[in-house]
Structure formats: structure tokens, C-alpha cells
Amino acid sequence: MLRGPMALPALERLTAEVVACRRCPRLVAWREEVGRVKRRAYRDCDYWARPVPGFGDPGAWLLLLGLAPGAHGANRTGRMFTGDRSGDFLYAALHRAGLASQPTSVARDDGLELRGAYITAPVRCVPPDNKPSREELEGCGPFLDREIALLERVRVVLVLGAIALDAYLAHAARRGVTIPRPRPRFAHGLVVRAGLPHVVVASYHVSQQNTNTGKLTPAMLDDVLAACRREARR
Image (cartoon, rainbow, N blue to C red; front, side, top):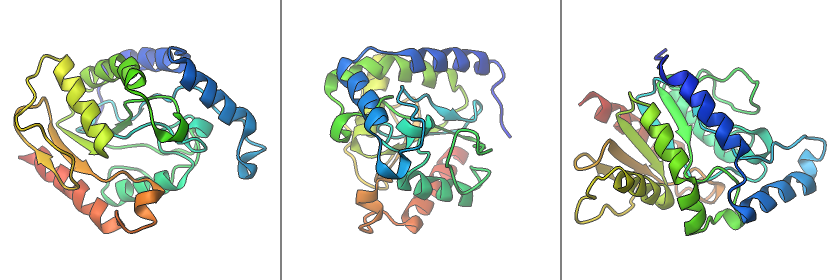
């Protein structure tokens, strides 16, 4: 398993800052309301209801960039893509690809480890209707910038959805990178190899809206993860 020993203490400090953040009043109010009201199936659960830090291997070659915590998934469990159907779909694929130690992710203490992969999001709190504002994306931007800087071995970034692609391009611009022209536009299977700090590969998000309708199938996600591995080896 790859490790980034020098990055680990800094990532732990960043995690503590993320979890303590109360920068965006709308997000703070919503995440805490969701944690109080709860979904009936989880009425006996103690919701996390705080910002959700990144998760994975500090020595990762692959960074997966989502959107934001799920209301009754990561906002409940405190770990990215954990405790909901989106996570079931994603971690099963990561396990098939040899990037996760098990195919399920149900709780922070379930023993799951990522191998060569790290998962984060441009927004760390669950937003109403899964729609963060531009100001909220910008508010979380410094966390993303610091996290990516600490993940020094990342070669490929897998963006899950159009918002994730835009967030990565905004990160690159903040690093002083001139964004390629024409500006990359989201499409499932998109690969951008030049002009950015990392190779970028795009996939539809693993939301139930996509997976339940067949817009994103397990085979499609397997193909994208295989493409990520090929790009890392180029």
C-alpha cells in the first residue's frame, strides 16, 4: 500500500480544520437540521452533521473528486460516500479495480481502506437540494487546494460530474495555471492530458439519479477506472 508519511500529519491537521468549519451559514444550518430531523430508517443513528473530510491513501495516485456529502450518507456517517446507495455503487467499483479493501462502506469504523486512491469533494457540507452556491464552492476552495497540494503522488483526477470538473479547473486557475482553450467541457469518458496539473478523467456522478436509470452502469464505471490506471502508467 502506498503511503505519504510526510503528508499524513498535515492531512490530519487539515481534517481537523475541515471538521470544525462553520464558514457558510446556510450549509451549517442545513447539515444540522438534517441531523436533527433524520430519515425514519436512521432515526436511532447519531448523525455526524459536520463537514466531511477527505478519505483514503495519503500516497494515492488517483484522486476522486465528487460534489458534496449526501444528506443521509456522509452527513450521517462522517465519511465520503459512506452509508448510501451512491457509496455502495462507487466502493464496489473501487474494490473490483483493486483500489478498496472491501466492496462496502457503511461506517467510519468498518475497516475499509483505500489503496492508491483518495476521495474528496469541493463542498464539505451537505447542501440543500444537492446544489451548493458559487460562494459556498469558493468558500471550500482553500481546503481543496491544500488537500491536493499534500497529495503529492496523485497523477490522475477522476471528476464525478460537471460540478467536480468545474471545481478542479477552478483549483488549477488558483494555482496560476492557464486553463486550456477551448475550456474542457464535461462528458462521460472525457480525458484531458495536457495543460493541467494532473491528467483529468471524467465520469457521470454515482448518484442514484444516474445509476438507477442506467445512465451510469457498473461496466461504465469499471471502464473509467481502467482508463485512469492506463493514464497513470503513460
